[in-house]
Amino acid sequence: MYFKPLTEEERRINQRIDEFNRAPYFEIFLIVSGVFCAFTALVLVGIF
Image 1 (cartoon, helix red, strand yellow):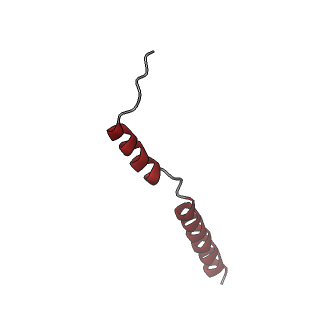
Image 2 (tube, rainbow, N blue to C red):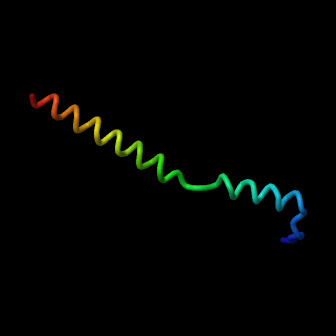
Image 3 (spheres, rainbow, N blue to C red):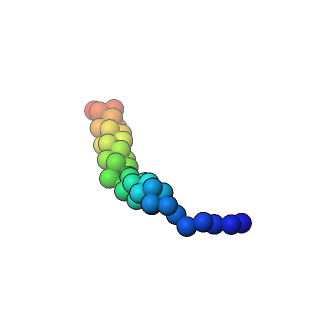
């Protein structure tokens, strides 16, 4: 397969993609924490 060097526009596009391409660890942590707290609250309300 033949590969050609990247053009300046392709480098700019790759740089923009790299800025937004990250794993949403903080959002995942918030969702898991919210589900855990909601489950705990439901269990406590169900006991009493």
